[in-house]
Image (cartoon, rainbow, N blue to C red; front, side, top):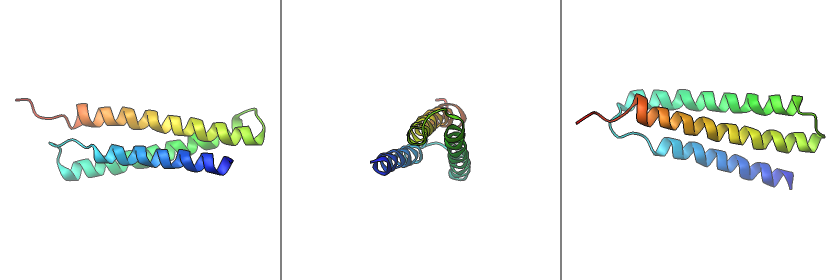
Length: 99
């Protein structure tokens, strides 16, 4: 049961990252946008893994609860990062030109 829950959360996290890539700004330079996307995905994955490992080692719970809570909080942390970086990318860094 734990493996199924973790699998579902990982699939949802992957779909969130794919949505982040799919809804890119239209007026951005493709090379700059690709470089920004790659850099943000690397940062998001690294921070999510570190958040998971930190929770797994520091939470004062039983081993099963540590695993479940670490995965859930890491997934929520990833969603928050994806949302913040989506807003920054689409509405601040690569905003459309003024008419």
